[in-house]
Image 1 (cartoon, rainbow, N blue to C red):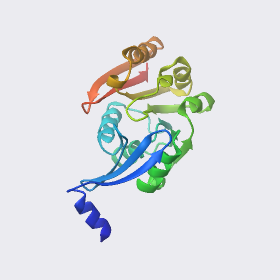
Image 2 (cartoon, rainbow, N blue to C red):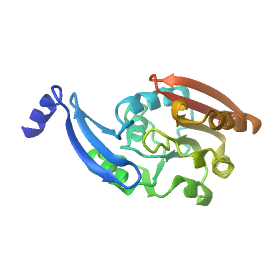
Image 3 (cartoon, rainbow, N blue to C red):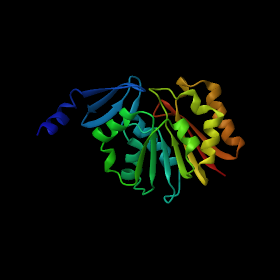
Length: 218
């Protein structure tokens, strides 16, 4: 009964639970209009605008349902929910996030452990891609800290390893914001992808805020 009452009242005023994170600052778990979302100070991390943005990207990206998916940046598990519950895909998913609090919130508040064939790894994605030997058919890069992607995720070491662990027919989704990213960094990614033979699509202002780079091997 109490749960139903909270959902009803959330249409009038949101319920907010705060969690402190070393990496992401103050995390807000919000019940808004009957739906739970995860926000930081300036960005949605799951189940609101990010859900719509990633739905768009996945719709544009055809990929083999037999190949593993690597998700760099977990949030509340919004991408996993899309893959399982909207696209109904059985792919094994490996999700990497540096923030143990994010992982805990995803488990406690967003039922992360209810999804089958999902491996959660608490590690800096920058180090993870250098160490893993596994190949993946789709790599989703969603590595925001608040509303900014750290510059190290634009450098040569990171991207050389992305190419190394991508399957021969693999695809990449890179989520960023041009307003919080230096223009030369954004352009460098596109140039690098094209130089090594990827077919590249750029979608600006997805859901009015984000820029998506979609790439596939030719």
